[in-house]
Every structure is written in structure tokens, then in C-alpha cells.
Length: 421
Image (cartoon, rainbow, N blue to C red; front, side, top):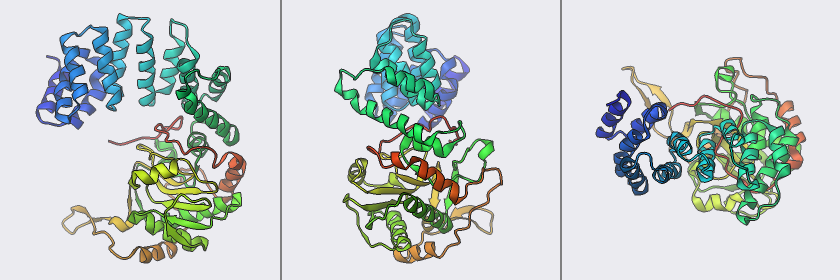
């Protein structure tokens, strides 16, 4: 028994499915596919994923069966462990080199894993003729997500209208992305604001002042969101609105507590009334974290009402919300709001979180507006980002802002940041 298989079995026997997946992410490419299946069958059963369990069992019974391998890979993609599908599909293509379905599924798995340049290389190297839909569309989309705008534009311009109307939303999304790229003109793979706008259509208000040159490139990993951060974000939101000439009629308050706190502060800062959330035109919808929003709220926000602006202060870049905000205060992996309690060290040296602030939302909104909005100077390694540079960017992209549906973009695109388990 190999060391990788033995380690995996120990994790399975301990019931540590998360630990097993971390182990397989590092080692599955070196293991026989049948061994991966032997580990995933009990893990899938423990997780209640009967489709993945059955697919793994089929591979155990027929390790070199192309049909069985393809089914296992497809179940891995559907269950969000596409990294396991990559070596499995490469094995399918070794057995059946002209298996077009396996080729496209492998491109999909690489895309899910944010390995966009590899997806383009895979499709470019295909021995068979590539069809416009979805083959060349996948090249165009993944080229853009890899930062190759010239290739993405060239492939998109060659695409005829899709015969299957199901591809029309994807075509429209890519066309909007290319149009936003023309406006934002991202300079390179460190231009976080330019690429954030290209991909999501949203304006990023603040770059993280920590670790820019050490792997973070303007995003936060773990951060505590204090009142000062909230006020800086709202002031930059006001700058965006003033630069574009928008004057919301009211702030629409989301029903969650954090959204209400931040929405009340925004209404007072902008001097407009606050009202319960609705999707009516001309309002400013303020969220602290859209991942906390109810599904019906997200459905209402996906297709924006005329003149409506959606602001999210703390946007998670490793688990993006179902809709992309029109303005994001900051990008984080994990963020804790001050009113939910702060980390403190006890006299005995232990670290814990203080109790949540139980005061009314109105009182906390007052504290936000009374905070010091001076920029966090950080470690001094982040490019300067004064108000006039943000205003110039907003002016440049204004004609492409608030255009189209607020699509979720699951990949961070060409600008990479370190992420932590």
C-alpha cells in the first residue's frame, strides 16, 4: 500500500473528510485513479453523496473503463471537487484520445480550478476539430480569465451566434466583460481594480494595504472590519456616486442586522431616507456581506432595477456571492465585523472573541459615522490609492458601469492572491 493511500485511509477512518480532500488535493495526481476512488467511496457515503459514491464504486470495479472513469470525473465536478476530476479525465483521454466529451469536461474542471491558461492550452492542443460552441467559446472565456485579452477578443470575434439558445447568456456575459476591459484597460496581472471591474462590473473602493508584494495584491486574507473601515468604504461609495452624478432617492435596508447597520449609516452620510428593502428603481442597496442575504433578496438583485446601485462592504473573493456588487468596499477571505465581537487576549494568554454588540443598529451606525476615516497606512508596500485616482478610474469606466445582470464570477481571474485553508 502506498504512503498516500495509507494516509488517506487513516483520514477516512477518522471521519475527517475535509482532511482527506486536502490530502488528495496535494497527492491525487501521483496516485492510481482506483486508489483515489477507494478513498472517495466511503468519504462520499459519509457525506451523503450517493452519486459520487456509486461512481467511485464503478471505478473500483473497472479501473480502466473509460465510461466509468468519465462518470466518476463528472460526479467530482458536480460535487465541487473538480481537482480530482483532472487526473481522471487525463486518464480517459489516454484510453480514448478523441473523446470530445472528456476533453470538454476536462476544460470545465480546469476552469473550476481557476487553471484558465491550462484550459486554453488543452483545447489548443486538441487533435480534433474544435467547434465554435462551446469549444472556442471556452477558449475565449478562459483566455480572458487568464489575462490574455487579445486572444479572448480574437476568439470572441470569430464566434457565430450559438445555435443552442442556452449559450446566449454566456455569450452576453463575455461580451460585457470584453467591453468593460476596453474601458478599464487593466495594466497587468497586479491591476486588481481594473480586473475586478472587467470581470464583475463592480468598482473596488479600497486596496488592502498589507502584503501587496507578498502574495495578496490588494486583497485581504483575514481582517477585522472596524468602524473606521466601514466609514472609509462609505466615503468612497459617495465619491463614486458623485463622480458618476448619481443621486439615490433612498437607501434600501436589507433585513439582516449587519446590512441594517451599514445601510442606516449610509443613509445618514448621504442625507437620504432609509426604507425597507425593495427592488424599486433609483435606490441604493447597502449590504455588509451579500453571502448573508436571503435567496429571495439575491434573486431580486441579480437583474438590477433602473438607477439602482448595490454596495457591499466586505466582498468574499474566495466564495463570491450569488450576485456581484456594483461597488465593493474591500475584498477578503475571512472578515469579522466589529459589532459581532473582536478578538481579545485574556490574562491567561488565551485568545477569544468578545461578546457581540447588542446595542440598537442606530447606535452602531452613529459610531461608524463618528469614526476616524484616515486611511490605514498598512506596511507601506501597497501602491498609493488616493481619491483622485479612484475618481479618474470611475470616470473612465462610467459608460460601462451598471450594465447588464449582476453575474456571479467564481474565479479571481488573472490577479492572484494567497489564500489560506
